[in-house]
Amino acid sequence: MNDWTQMIPGVYREQARGAEDIEFRTGVPVFLGLTAAGTAPTDEPVVLTRWVQFARLVAAPVEGGYLAAAVRGFFENGGQRCVIVTRPAPDGALTTAALHERVVDSLRSLGDDHDVDLVCAPDLMLPLRGGGYSSLERLALIGELLKTQVEIASHCALSGHRVAILDSPPAPPGSTAAALADAYDHAGALRRAIAERDPAWRRDAALYTPWVGPERSAGLVRSEGDVYVPPCGHVAGVYARMDAETGVHKAPAGVALAGVCDLEVLLSDGDQAELINAGVNCLRAFRGRGLRIWGARTLSEEDEWRHVSVRRLVRTLARWLELRLADLTLENNDSMLWNRVTREVSAHLDELHAAGALRGRIPAEAYYVKCDAETNPPEIRDAGMMIAEIGLAPFAPQEFIAVRLVQHSEGLSLTDAANA
Figure 1 (tube, one colour):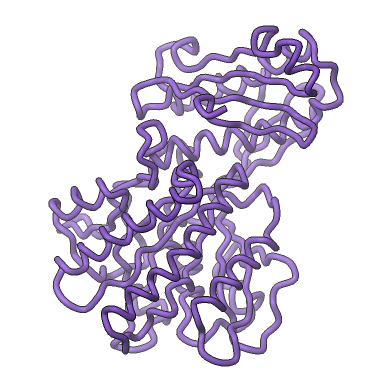
Figure 2 (spheres, rainbow, N blue to C red; figure 1 turned 30 degrees about the vertical axis):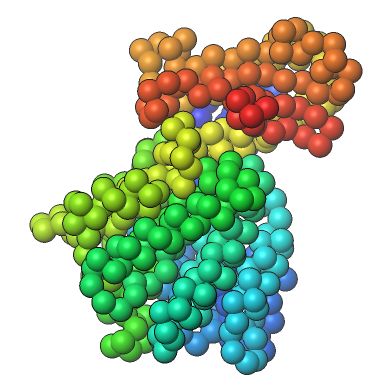
């Protein structure tokens, strides 16, 4: 019998007989940002557990940057721990090429830190700050920034345990209709750009609009003409809060935002319906109910992977399995190993079912684990692999999701059974 104890919000420790304790965190974002030109890049990611640490531990942000507002928004909305990776801005103008290079380099330096399961890049939209460009120039800039968003989605997908929280561009001048069309077009372009590389990467990215206006007491508003910031930090804080209160299976939607007094664009129910079909999660203002996140979709067009909560549930399961079963390579690939995998995976899924992460009146209706001679025929064993099939019944969609646990020479991975 496993003894699960919540140590601090978002941190869980599993105690099992004969096994070392495993500390396991969720809702931990990395914030990729820019510091002032001439500052040193972070050799090691900086870990923050309180907003007040930002000024002391993080180099001066680039002028007009959004990093500080995003990190503060994260902690205001219930975040407990985040990681900061920065690169200095160039001495001259900040080009999209220079920004792309810095984001990719930051992701590379992050490595396989298992605490980090969310990725935010609030400074990505800096080239669009302040206007001063034609509509055609704006489209060209967004097209270049979109390439960087694809790289972030790629990083999350290939990591095996991260999800990207992406920002739509700031609303263009004009009416709400213009802003709606802009967000819709950006989502479509982003979906297509990711699909050109690998459609499966869209499962690990969620897009949010519109930008948010931080409360003036936060001291982060720079001028009357620049009062809105990307929403990723505030949204990440809600993810972390939901993880701590309920678990990753709770959709981060319908939840009030803290530290925000305004939205750049006020969207209607009709606007919301249009955008959610395009894969855009909206922030909404409701009379008497405040400002809320109103959507929790990924950019995927596959029914089983449309929901952020389902994708994060599977990603979190993959992280747990990788940590808990790290020593599988030391064991013989035989029935004893298969029984161990079945036993330990089933015990963990029992816990998830009891916590409400899986539907079904009894465990047999909530999941299944198959690891035997059928999933491990001689050719699989001869290749140095061990395969288990796992079926999960999350609350959405209303069907089982099948994934494959694969042990090989490089470790463990959890893959979509349909694409295995």
